[in-house]
Amino acid sequence: MLLTFAVQGVLIGLAGTLLGALLGTLLADNLQSLVGALEHLLGTQFLDARVYYMSDLPAYVEGIDVLGCAAWRSCCARWRPCTGVARGAHRARRGLAA
Image (tube, rainbow, N blue to C red; front, side, top):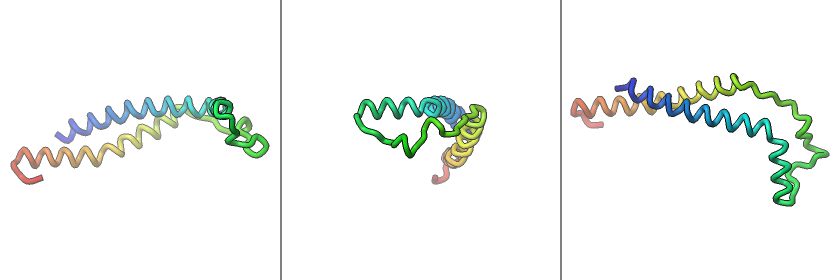
């Protein structure tokens, strides 16, 4: 029973991880243009170019690092709820109070 909940939790977590990593990487790669478009749309300036040099920000996104960290966090976050549900199902099957 524990394996069923663990596998389901991990699969759902990995699907969310892949989607989140993809969207986060796209956002990070296009941050400067997105901020510029939002500033133009709202008619305001969020980050003063004389102070915050968004174009000179040294950022390099490693896709495998993003996926690895996100997958590990997803698996760890799912383990405790899965074990609790499996124990509750086991106790209910045996006729014990949850």
